[in-house]
Figure 1 (cartoon, protein in one colour):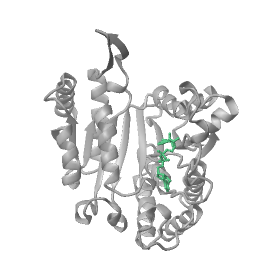
Figure 2 (cartoon, protein in one colour):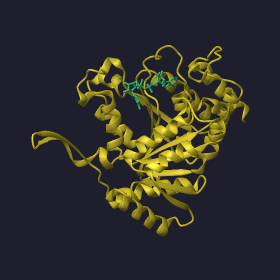
Figure 3 (cartoon, protein in one colour):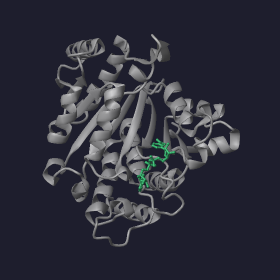
Figure 4 (cartoon, rainbow, N blue to C red):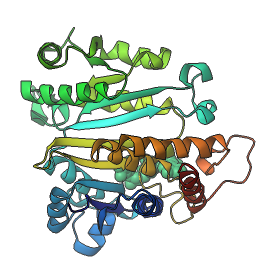
Length: 368
Ligand code: NAD
């Protein structure tokens, strides 16, 4: 059997810096755990624009469709701010998501004990937090038609349409239920069925899928506004939160901040299963290209490394190895390893990106 394949698109700014540490981790798994990957690399975002005049070359898109998983760093930066909308770095990312039809966006919000003080909430509310938000990513109000700005009765009117089909809701719901079975077995679905017809349909379809296929999973429903309150009041009540594109955009950013630094947050975007049974998948840190610190060796590589851990778990069915990697990160944080973004007000000397990679690799060695 051939090795599983990975396409690395490191992108711009700190993307290549954090991805260098991920490559070391990938090599470690090849050497020490007999899990070799066929890794190829290509350009995305501003880096692709500089070479090809587009933020994602067609050949790169074709490669992304063929591999078992894509690992992406970050795109964008001030040098590209004035480009035409159609060739902005972010269009490369959106094209990948759209053409791979990555309909389920998974954003874990996990609070490592050693970093509980970083949260804006009280330590006991967030310590040990481990929740997952599943956001529908390819439909809803960001894509619905009609949309636009037109003139009506001598004034401008802005229009967007919240639109969901049954099958779009069903596939997002299945992704959430499947995940819950691998975690705490609970799904809370959030919408606004009290004021939106699309919310009524969302709730109906989630109930139908639950009854027919996932009655072993505990299901609850919550209006999304209450969900936002509950996320900051008592986030540990949740396991998997399932929600649409718009509410998911907001709720997942809110949940992210429960855990402290942007440099710690991974994500996965999954699509339909391919012929080999693996889902189409792209893994990327939540943060951007951080132009303020890029090129200085200051970036925290953990979000990107945790994104690779998600790839191990969700693309390659290597849950135990993903846990090994996450535990190594937990260990180095407990031992006091800190990049600049994780320094408290008392200061101290922050580690460089490479030094953080070094201690994570040592902790992996120690796990054997
Ligand atoms: P950003 O996430 O790049 O940075 C926000 C702040 O967090 C900065 O102060 C940065 O230094 C810090 N930060 C982010 N990641 C860090 C890390 N790993 N280690 C340490 N500190 C980290 O967001 P921004 O400044 O709003 O955007 C910068 C550029 O990135 C823009 O061009 C934006 O469009 C792009 N962007 C890309 C993505 C993506 O590729 N998915 C996401 C968000 C923003």
